[in-house]
Amino acid sequence: MATPKNKPSCIARAASVSDAPLEDRYMLLIEAVQDYAIFMLDAGGNIASWNPGAQRIKGYTHDEIIGRHFSTFYTEEDIAAGKPARELQIAAAEGHVEDEGWRVRRDGSRFWANVTISAVRDANGALLGFAKVTRDMTDRMRLTELERASEVSAQVQITRENEQKRIARELHDDLGQQLTALKMSVALIEATLAQKDDTAHLVPQTHALQKEIDAMAMSLRRIAADLRPPLLDDLGLTAALEWLAEDFTKRYRVAATVHVEADEPQFNEFASTTLFRIVQEALTNVARHAAASHVRIELARDGATVSLEIEDNGVGAKPGLPSGNKSFGLLGIRERVRQLHGTVSYISSPGAGFRMSIRVPIADVR
Ligand SMILES: Nc1ncnc2c1ncn2[C@@H]1O[C@H](COP(=O)(O)OP(=O)(O)O)[C@@H](O)[C@H]1O
Ligand SMILES: [Mg+2]
Image (cartoon, rainbow, N blue to C red):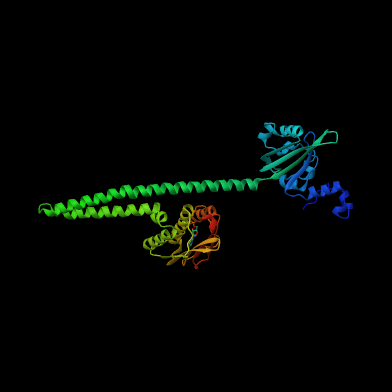
C-alpha cells in the first residue's frame, strides 16, 4: 500500500494499534480500507480528507484533491442537473443520502458508484460537514449485465427452438402428407396407364415422377430433422444422440459412437436440447477441421455432475483456442454450457486429436 503523505504523525508514537488513542485507531481503520473511498467534505462540499481507497478508486492523490469541490467526481450531465448540491441538501436535511450512478475518475474514465453521504454535526447540531463513502460497483454491474444478456440469449434460443419445432412439424405433417398423397395418385395413374397398350409407353415417365417425389420426401425429412430432431422430443437425449451419430457417419464417413451410462438422468427439455445442440456443433467441427476417422461421444453421471465428452482422433488444434473473431462455434458452446451453470474445457495438441469435456450440475438438467 502506498503511504499517504499527510498521515497523522501521532499514530507513529503508539507502540501498537490498541495503545493508540481511539481517534487514531479510527484513522488507521480508514487508512487501511482499500475497497471504499472514505473522505470528509466541509459544509460547502469541499474535500477535507482522503483515504488510500479513495485514491485507488478515483485516481487523485491526497495533495491533488484536498480543498477541491466534490462535484469534480460527477459527470457533466449530473453537474448540469444540479445533482451534487441536491445530494448535500438532502443529506443535511435527512441526515443521509444514498445514490448509485456514474462517477468520473481523474483520467476521465467513468465507474459505476454506490455513494453514501452522511451529515456530520457537532454536539449542538451545527453542520460541520459530510462523511462520504463511495464504492466502485462497475464489476458487479457488468456481471449483472452479463447475466441479463445470458438470460436474454437463453430466451432467444428457446424461442428459436420452438419456432424450428413448429416448422419441422408443419413440414412433416402438412407437406409430408401431401407428398404421400401425391405419390399414391401417381401410382394409381401409372397402374391405369399400364393397363392399355396405347398408354403403356408413358409408364417409365410416371415411374420417374414417383422417384422424384421420393427424393422430395427424403429432402423434406432431412430438412425437418435438421430443424428439430424428432427423437429428441419423443425418445429423449440418448436416442437423439444415437440418431445424430448415425446420420453423421452416413454424411461424412467418419465413425461416430455414442456411449451413455445405463442410468441416464431424466433431462428436462431445455437441458436435452442444449446438450444436443452442443454435440451437433462439436460434430460440425469434427467434420470441418479434424480429418478424423473416429469420434466418440460419452455421456455419464458422476455423483451430482453430468459429464459430456466429445473426442476425436483427428489432427487436433493449434494451441491457444479459441481464437479469431469469426469463430462462433466454441463461443456458442461456452454460452450454452454457461446457461446450464456448467464448465467446458478443451484438450488438444497438433496431431493428437481434439477433446471437449463438459460438466454440468445434475440439478440444472433435471
Ligand atoms: N475437432 C476439432 N479438431 C481440430 N480443430 C478444431 C476442432 N474443433 C475446433 N477446432 C479449431 O477451433 C477453431 C474454432 O472453432 P469454432 O469456434 O467452432 O469456429 P469455426 O468452426 O467457425 O472455425 C476452429 O477454427 C478450429 O481451428
Ligand atoms: Mg465450428
